[in-house]
Length: 260
Ligand SMILES: Cc1cc2nc3c(=O)[nH]c(=O)nc-3n(C[C@H](O)[C@H](O)[C@H](O)COP(=O)(O)O)c2cc1C
Image (cartoon, rainbow, N blue to C red; front, side, top):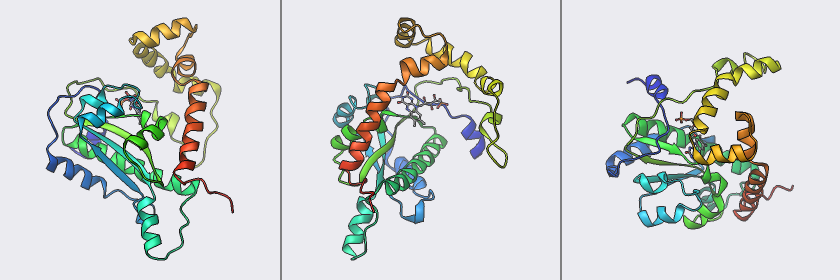
């Protein structure tokens, strides 16, 4: 299969066989990931490969009890990492300019790019993945369980294993709503509603299949998908709490010395 055909077949996999991933296959996939471009070729990321079932059991709570964490044989956690680079700078008597928010973002971009390359490499070998947003939401707890030193912050993660399900392809917003030619083009209200038209139908149907989302939506008087997103799924208190927790953790991990 060529790369583009494979990309078009992507679906997140949430049910896995217990079959382990052979070490040499995992190594091949990770090595492919390391070919990803990185800022200044500094490779300011680390990939944590967690196979140990006890550790993955401990990670269930910060991952909000998402069963993929324990059901898949491997959990990958991608971290923004300036620890290694800063240690090397110190050992080389070089100035260290990487204890600030900009450096966190540089490292986070590196880590996230590598994660997607590894996802595609894994899928090309018949494995399935499901990204876990809980990695960033609870980066502080995950960092503690994984013994992360200062200047290392988890930013993305996914479960990895052989699929035990064959889900349908999920819809995407139309490319015309996502791509702007030359400059950002202004969009009318009507066009905005059109961009989300199919999503409103398919997303609503999908979420109403979840008992929890259906009941919570009914209780909160939610009438459409947009309301479901921000009244039930991604609430202001949850997002404010995750924001403030993340900023505190960035400070703790020595990424927030931003004053001149
Ligand atoms: C950064 C990120 C975080 C995600 N977090 C979760 C998650 O915590 N749980 C989950 O079941 N799926 C998660 N997903 C998967 C998305 O729900 C999924 O990609 C999206 O619904 C589209 O479906 P598809 O990947 O099957 O095409 C995440 C995806 C991304 C990119």
